Amino acid sequence: MNDVRVIEIKKSVYESNDRQALLLRNRLKEDGIFLLNLMSSPGSGKTTTVMRTIEELKSELEIGVVEADIDSAVDAETV
Image 1 (cartoon, helix red, strand yellow):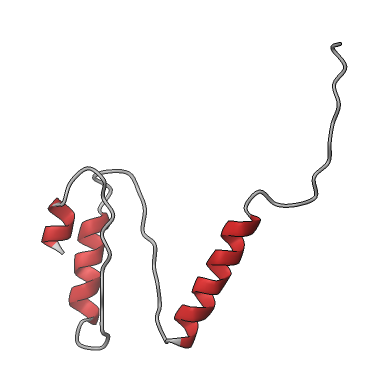
Image 2 (cartoon, rainbow, N blue to C red):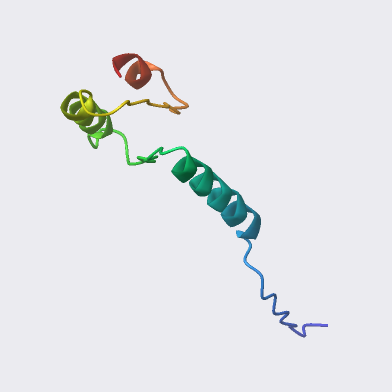
């Protein structure tokens, strides 16, 4: 009753996610869009980095920001 049985599954659990990510990367590339996903701990300087980057590049590039902070809208309002 305590026998352990190992089943090998040679398929990534991320297969569906990887497929969707590849489709998105290809679409963005076709449209000439560079996407950066910036994640880090609170207070690490993400918003400051984004604001400084926008300031430096706004005359050269069309820039958009998607904010996904589940706790507040402070950073979204800042940007």
